[in-house]
Image (cartoon, rainbow, N blue to C red; front, side, top):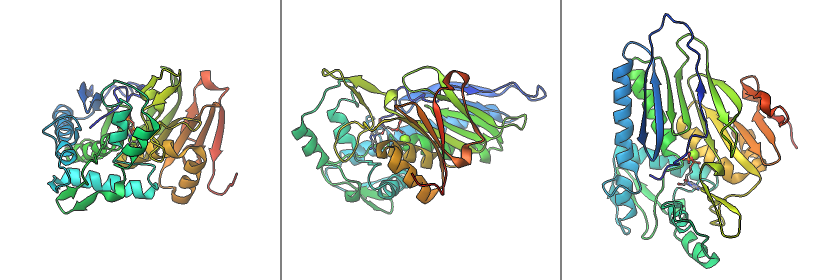
Length: 343
Ligand code: ADP
Ligand code: MG
């Protein structure tokens, strides 16, 4: 799967040592799914649980990589219209991605890969495709055309799946489940910038997740969470500057085939499930602020923080108390989105 090389949109996690009666955590940073991951696990069984979690994520990468010729997604993408057998984990992920594509009215488009390739985001050989090329490639996208059967999938010839926008989030959920089974009650997983928090810090307080300011290494604010995922999408994670001097980001508007450009710099979603956060952070980024706010009002099964080009931070009322703007960013305008209010 094509994952953000610099997916570390959430730059760091501030963890205080807390109560010294607790043992040092097990911690490991490694490369998987085309990004860096850091797992921090507390408790008696920490080392073993961490090793199992790492093994699991490497196993999922093997299933979902778009480039690994042995992966299930590679087999699907080179099936030339024939049905392909897939494992339970892949089936669930694809089913979820297709469901979210429908619920977001195609803002999340798991079949966008041919278009992404034309822009060079899959190889790093960036270019601006012609309008004609994009129009032709858009004909090879459309989540409605993927047919999922029990244990298998059939994708029309020329179409390709890219689970890059949801895979890390889904992996976070599976890892949280695994760690719980291992008896872990306190852990923090940084899955290439996706944060999955298991329980609370060993001292009983919540985790403080730092949110990275777009196009910067600084942190503009932080969010307190427990038993939750926090996921950010933004063009600044991967982009190139075209010969026309414009910046083109890696999240594509499936209606036009062009990188999203709608006044949003980043979207952070917080909810219990990593897969929901991941799918929505990408989809809401595609939708833009106004549609994203309406979408939230209709569903309210997640919280979000939107950062706009004109330095506004829009956050849903559920996390108002949990979010704080960093000192250096006090001049940004904070606006709370409420259920009842209408603009
Ligand atoms: P990241 O994985 O970089 O942290 P996202 O979760 O937002 O960030 O996923 C972005 C990735 O999803 C892109 O790199 C690309 O592989 C894929 N993608 C781009 N546009 C879309 C889209 N509209 N719908 C679904 N996937 C997309
Ligand atoms: Mg995403």
